[in-house]
Length: 108
Image (cartoon, rainbow, N blue to C red; front, side, top):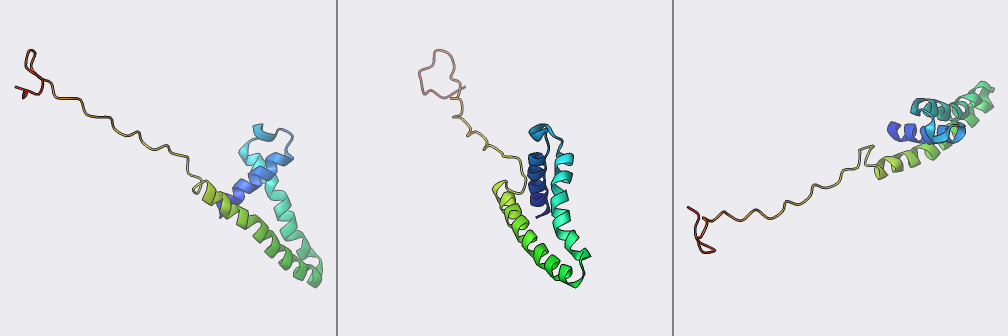
């Protein structure tokens, strides 16, 4: 779940940065984390109504962030590099027969 969140924060941060794809991953993740942190922490500074609203907002933000994060993990096989299957082994070489022997003669 946390790897998926980091991936979403990175995507959001790269969308906000002027460099886009050339931006460093750490800068993109940190910048993508800022809106998430503001949305989940800011309402708690407004008393009881802010507390209730903040809890509802935190639950909504967690659903909106965590469901795509888990889906991102499932699609990328939990961050694993894609592996191509090993090539099938070819047919073994035929046994060597002595020179001048008829085909199919046993090797010496």
